[in-house]
Picture 1 (cartoon, rainbow, N blue to C red):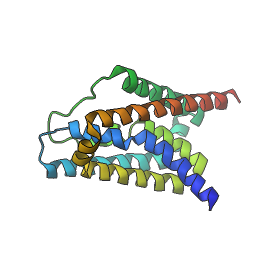
Picture 2: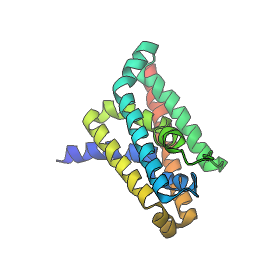
Picture 3: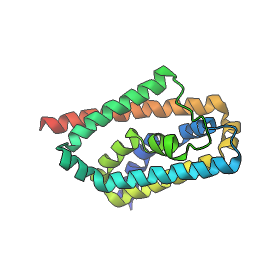
Picture 4: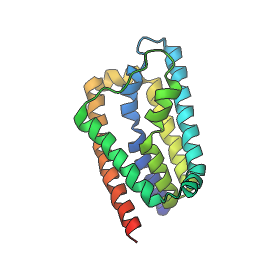
Length: 195
């Protein structure tokens, strides 16, 4: 039982940090804030389904694409780690507002991709397949996306409880964890290429 729980946590935590459900709530609130609730919920579901589809496609085709391009997992770890480090740094230091959609159609882009299925998630998925296997990786992905759905459904309530500053504070903490994961990926990738 212990190894199963350990594998589940090993898969869940990196995906939780990569997807950042709490940070997504703040972004979701900022995308077309004047849209009716039904439209926002439909766009939220569309974003989650888009993110899930891209992630599943990457799980099963990622290594084939790498093979065709002559890219190794170590190369992807270093590149993904650098991208994650840049994203985390921008979130921590830059304070830059992310692009907001000018209309009510934001489910596929930017919500589904790149906000849900972005470089952080795709890198984490590829690493987790080798570490814990496809079953635990997909199960953790589904659980994290369900958390995102719950967050989207109750976004207004969560914002009232935590406040905009509380959401931003938690998002910054998650960005710091993302930076640590990025450094770990770069280190592992560098060690993999040195062998």
